[in-house]
Every structure is written in structure tokens, then in C-alpha cells.
Image (cartoon, rainbow, N blue to C red; front, side, top):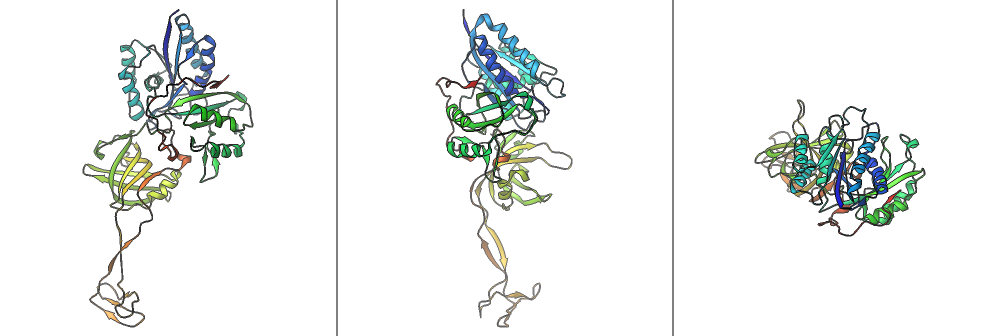
Length: 446
């Protein structure tokens, strides 16, 4: 029998009340392996543009890449479709699952570009269907079928450059919706033992764990890291206090800043797009309403507001200390303007490139005794409380104040980092080519 290659993309199966597309992928790992399929990569978890208004909860699409005997092709498709149909929250408004079956060994360049655009911007279902037709691929959509977009994007993003890994452990169904039970001390120990090769396990500012989600989805916990070996080792160090139904290692674009696209001018900024932009601080930070920090940057083409919200923690505290004239590079997603709010960049990072001098004006020093003078009123001169001298010809003096902040990169606190945000731990660990070695032994259970 002839061996074939297939890329199976999935998206938009979950809702705010239940479900998880990664869990469907985990089920399919077991089922497809049982049919005799051979995995040519770990399941790919591809986070798409986090700013689109119709996104799923984590905006993550999945791709399963397999080789198989052609005689089981129809069985593979039937298994994928029936598994999605059974586990997607089809009754929930806004959940519109989609599946893409792509039967080519090499992903066409046009599909790669489509995937990149889905991560950094906005793409349409019409564009996805056009590509599927051109390359004679197949798709199945439920309801509005919007998930076909993410499914094809996951197929097209083969993670040829920077990527990370995540091991996800899943709960038994009877525990869905209840508080997750994991030995927290073991997670802090794991984080320390595997640093810097795993990331975003704990929030040291608040002293709490962040590998366990809080929603009603099937995930018990997830650990992200640089290699499949390290995430599996970290997984074995964590002590769950409830049964684990299954676990899988995924390869992913999480923690890579894959969503951020540089714009050369502020006038090029578009709503819903993640970006990197450079400008001069043109309005001092304001605190509204006593929690969020907003300031403006400008360049020769225009001006835009930048917002650091209260949950961003250290980034918000840093943003408060910017002043007019500072030169900064800002990273984040663009919020659509409304009647009450202009176009705004919701900040993920700030790189301070140049500090403006901070100048204050103070009363002069008494020439006779050296004590700082007191003003006698507007344009009336100064007097010395110590020696009694008076001066009508002196003016306030300019004093340069040392800034509390310095140049460099500042990132939102760990607890508020998006899936795609590259944390400090990953700087210097970026991968510039796909890993060519095979899958590790025992990369999933069952």
C-alpha cells in the first residue's frame, strides 16, 4: 500500500462554558495511532491573532501531521469528524468548528502566508476556502464554519523557525468545573529545577502558580518549555492531587512573539492588529480610573494612545514614570476606536530607547549664606529666611533630576502575559530552524 501524508487542522470547537480544541487533538492522537497512523510531528498548537473580536477562548488552532496507508484514509477522516462532532460545544452561539484535510507533503507558500496573516492580522473564510479549492484540499465546517480559517492556518504554520513545547495534562470528566487540585509546592520546585528551560510556571510577584487554568475546560495544567524532553521532565516533577486522564506534548508558537508585526509609521496602525511601533512620548501618563495608565506617542505621521492596564503589574508601574520626550518602542494589540476612546495600543511590552531629561525649576541659593531662598510672590524676587537678604534680580534655576527608570525592555507581569508573548526567560533561546530529530519516546498517554 502507498504511504501518504496528511495535515489535519482543527479550530473553534470550544466555548466559554466547556470544551477545548487541544483536548480533541489529544483524543485524536490516541484514536489515529490506534488506526495505524504514524505521527511526523508533535501535534501543533498554533495561537492565532489574540486581538480578533470573534476569537475562541485562547484563540488556539491545532494541526495533526501524519503518514498513513491510503487504505485507511476515509477511516481517518470519519474519526476526525465524529470526534469533533461529539466533543465540540455545537449548541453554543459563536462556536463554529472547522476541519481542514490537507494531503500534501510540502505546505505551499501561499498557505504559509495565509497562516502568518492569521497570526499577525485578519483573514477571511472566503480566503481560506479559495486556497483549499486551489490546492484540492478538503474542509468540513459546522454551523458557520469559521473554524476552517484556524484549521487551515494551523496547517500552514509548520513552525520552521522559533517555537516552544507544551505538555498538557487533562482531568477526568467528573472533575470538570471543580477547583483544580495540584501540589503547589511541587510546581515551585519544578520551576526552580527546570529554569530557564521552562517558563511562565509561577508568578513570583504574587507568589502563586499559573500553570492551572481557571475555567471549566478539561485541562488540569500545562507546562511550557524549550524542548519536549524538558517539558516531560517538568511534568513528572509536578504532583497532581486528582486523576490525570491523559497527557500530550505539543509543539507550539507560544512564547515567541509570533503575533507582533512592526509598523514603520503610526499612521499604518489598524484595529485588531498586534504590532511593534516606535514613537516619542507626547503626553504624560494619566492614571484612569486610578488603576490603568494611558500615555500617547507620536511620530511624523500621527499620534496614538498606549494603555497599560492594572493587571499588567510591573509594566503599568514602569509606564507611569515615562515623560514627554522619551523615545519608546511599544508592543501590543490595537483596540478598535469607539465614540469615547481613540485608537489605543493595549501594551504587552515597552522598550525605552532614549530618556528625555527631566528638568525642574527651583528657587536659587542665597549668595551670602548658601540657604535656598523663599519666593516673595510672583515677579517680586526672593528673600533669605536665614540672613534676611532680599534679591529682586534672581530667577529660578534649572535642575536636572535623575530618572527612576532606565533604557531597556520592560514586559507585562507573568500573570498577565498572553500565550504568544515572549517572556524574559526566552530571550537568547530563540530557535532559528526546525528540529529535525524524531519524536521522543512516550510523548503522550495513553
